[in-house]
Image (cartoon, rainbow, N blue to C red; front, side):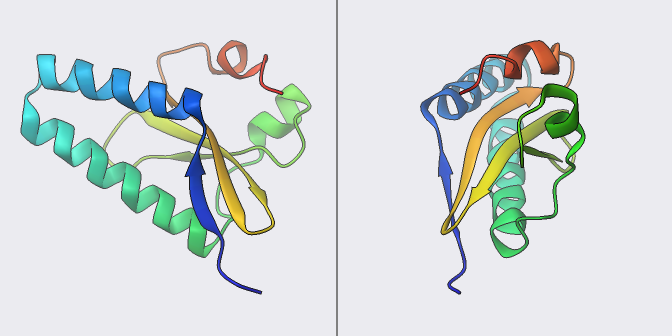
Length: 107
């Protein structure tokens, strides 16, 4: 079986854009670039091993196969589902948010 590829949903892209805007304004371009590096690293990890992320929110929200991976050095979590050839990234959320509420309305 071929290695899956990562795909960010529109909401995940929006989450990343908001995080970048905040980091650029509050911490500067170097930190914003480090965030992108951490996100890319996390996505490469789950593409290599889709079962890596925690299933905690899958059980909590009743969303089968939903996994969560915390980004290295940043308080953000990538929420994704592995579907065949695709690691489908649903959201990229800051841990200070009410994560279950933010994910509860996903299809």
